[in-house]
Length: 122
Ligand SMILES: [Zn+2]
Image 1 (cartoon, rainbow, N blue to C red):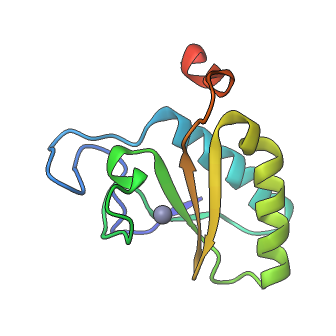
Image 2 (image 1 turned 90 degrees about the vertical axis):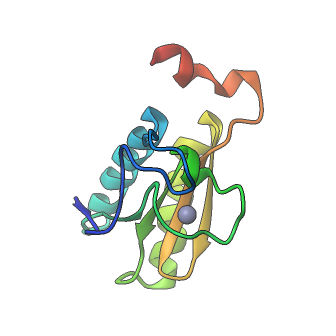
Image 3 (image 1 turned 45 degrees about the vertical axis):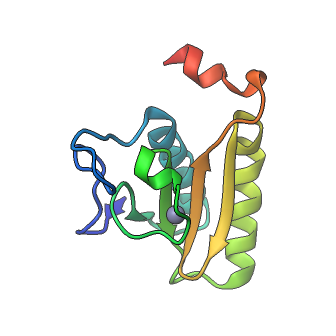
């Protein structure tokens, strides 16, 4: 797994606070994504964590609850398959995924109490 050189995972805020961290749920999602990418013969590259300018004002990135993973080398059918695989595992646990130019955005945003299992585990 690679992490793009300007990605911040820990300790520096994207929007003011000096003490932000990528949350454990996102490390879990990165692990799942890494395993899925490997299944398709690719390494995983994280292209955004806490830092950066995101189009959404209240982006989950700023709370350490989102990550972007690179899709630059993948063709669209592979991206679709990878997102389908990600959803199979992560959807029911409260994660959302969105295909963006050059990356897949993954965020933790549980809608119901029964997707909060991971918070009880951690
Ligand atoms: Zn993102």
